[in-house]
Length: 116
Length: 113
Image (tube, rainbow over all chains, first blue to last red):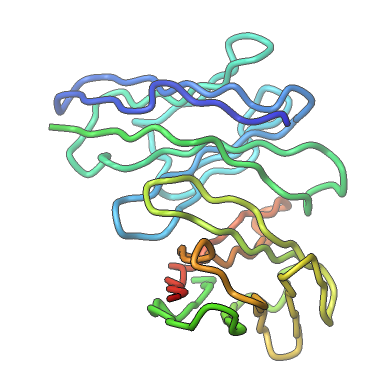
């Protein structure tokens, strides 16, 4: 069964450093998402991406964050200057166009980001 | 602030019983509703989606939606210890022409043998 993959599974970085989290969505999916989940808290939407541009972003997704689809398969989240509070699990998700905006999303296994 | 509310639990049920998980949402314009299961340290896994009022059944799972009451629930019949997890309610809320998934904090379910 097709699945969303993410690398690395765990990233440790020092405060102020840049990190890039990588995702490979399901191949026929057209919509891509990043979420984060701080330990013990709820899943929070960061950004959605379609047709090579951001379609929605939350208040969390400030100028420190950016997303890119550098080729036909990868979808990346970059944090330019990490802060301690960026420590969280970051999930990538994707969906197809079946059912339009109301269709289900499928999540990757996540990247645990630890900022020290 | 458009919210999705869930009782954090834990909800403890004996094996074989029916587990009932509840969720309320504040945005009356919400169109689609999802239940995810999340094991500790893992990603959310989609269990059920429901779009119209009434019940939707899939195996041991039944999702129930009442848009007038802004209430969605998940019933798990014949609960098994492997069902022990956190169950996340997610609602797609309209925002600027798009639909943003908004999650509740989740309800922890413990099924004991």
